[in-house]
Image 1 (cartoon, rainbow, N blue to C red):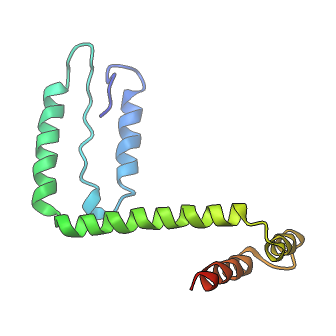
Image 2 (cartoon, one colour; image 1 turned 135 degrees about the horizontal axis):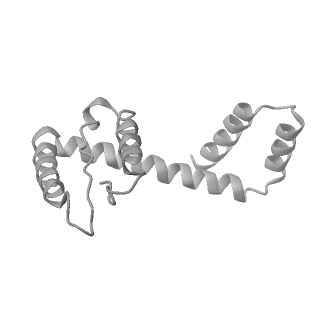
Image 3 (cartoon, rainbow, N blue to C red; image 1 turned 90 degrees about the horizontal axis):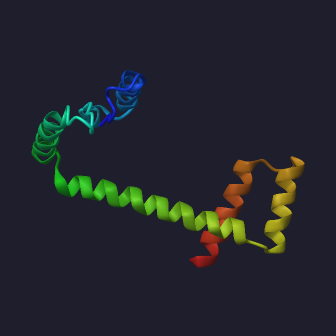
Length: 126
């Protein structure tokens, strides 16, 4: 929704939103961009129609269990990444501090260091 569609920058905002939508997967690109003006009510009826149409399309075309599984996988990956980030940021073990120093000095690259850290974290929990 582009509100304040009567403002000078509204057309640019609409173009930018549509351009961003083109970056999504093909099946996720069909999102309407609707212009509204809250003070006059212009575009509100179009917005209501778009919401109804989008809802029908969404439930008609998307396999709900598959969508929920993809969403669950995505959320779990985010949570795992956050937990690993906290492990790394809070790790004060001497071996890990030495690893940080070797990366900083160029003796070891980031990819190698991450592989070593991941091995340590996951091997110790196995």
